[in-house]
Length: 142
Image (cartoon, rainbow, N blue to C red; front, side):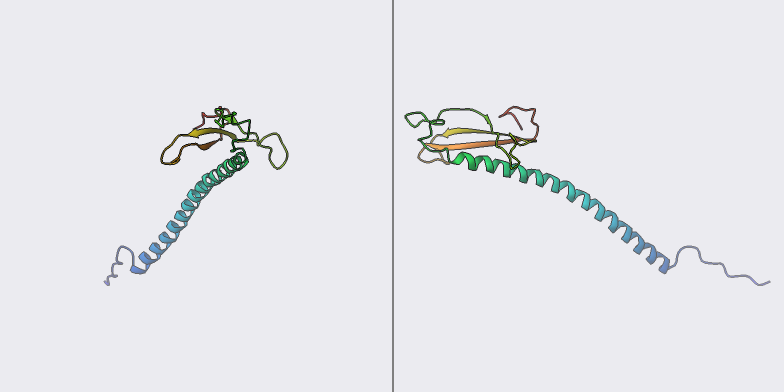
């Protein structure tokens, strides 16, 4: 009686290499999908920051012309800043509507005393807030 040789159990080196290559291709595709999703989420936040920066810059540029002692809306006869607190900034957008739909823009103008940022005193600061939750009042958004 002739005995057949017993087939070796397990995988050959070629089968293992093909399996490893297939696993690497699938893993690389999954990682690219995960990274793409994370990048899209990050870009959405960057877009909001860029929009908020542009809105704040618009407000600052518009108010820059008022920072002069001869503006009676902001200064008294002795050139002292009139405290106004937080004010809503309703600048008409390019379409000519009353204000921008979406974020709430607020500003306040305040006198800075002498210090590191204002060595001689008499400096004026303009604070601008962009609130995405328009239910909040000026000066309260976080």
